[in-house]
Length: 457
Image 1 (tube, rainbow, N blue to C red):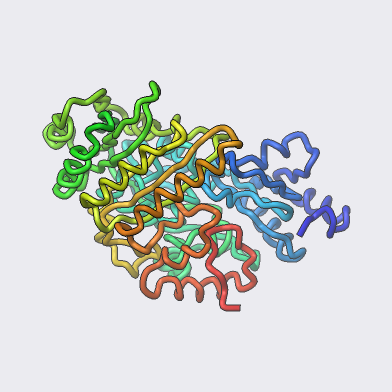
Image 2: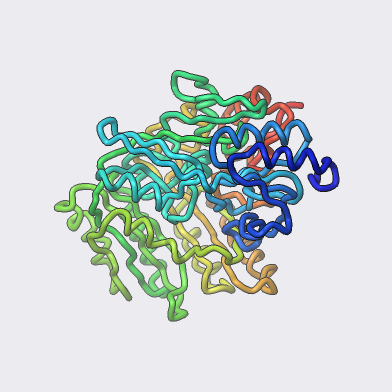
């Protein structure tokens, strides 16, 4: 429902005046910039944007939206592939200016606000030699990634981002601020760790931190596409016996010179004196086009993928968990990547296991704990005239890989046209448990611009 056509002008102005932050409408100086999100495919125009300056503004915004039956989108880092942080019409609750971070080095914890990105988070925690699992693109927001699960280089050693969440403050659909933790609103805390933004607006997240770095061993190793078969077989065997302080991805990509390549992407966060030995088989495989692995600050490693996913490019993703990494899957991936229409597109196999698999399937709403690999197909291009071609390539690649994939999905990688796969993201009775939680905290589905768990009503 549109604010401008359904609400009296004085009511809108009253709401804007109630904010410590800003209320923006079309025509205001900062409106166009505020409505833009990372994925250039997304071009939506909210009727009203609440740029919140604190929790009180979030409460005002939630109450205003509920009272006036408005669609709500919640923006943290704005990095959702599906563009869930912005809606057409309705109210966009913009948290991007909530940047507070407080590290407690003695307790090895950190409390951060939802506008913080992983690059900002790592900058603060690494000042004390601490880190937790976070996204590998530094402009990704901490809140969205954590609430959906949270894959990253440190997951095999320390678990997912959501496994390191200790508590969260959340404004639920009734406008109440609640704290969720293992001892307070424990069922809500369970749901926040993998259930996405279905239950309210998170205004603060507290994480467990771990000693990491500040130096780690990692980077990219490039090989020509011609050796993809041998590289995939090596990758499968290498990752089967890798220690938990090593995470290695395998990717298909195009080099800056336009050459199709395969890439080992690796991060070793254990004792550096052991790292060279651990990585020696990987670095001695074949004849690399380039070996960029080196000792570097953890913060530097976390920024390496950033230039590959700049804001404004058009993106469409498909993903699944892989259960069979065998010869037929290798043949399929190679054949499909050879058809890639854009030099910016890539396909990655992400290594799971380790600490990820030691968390019980019922302990968090992220329940896909036993699967060893994730597959992500990131179709990325710049010319809107090429949209159909690039979307089709990603869909065709994913369809061809279905025989080797689980029915399960990872909610943070689901694009806007995959509502039917949301239930498959939650194994066993997880989805039904999330529905019950949704019915308790958001029975009218006020928070539906997300990977939506629908109420029983």
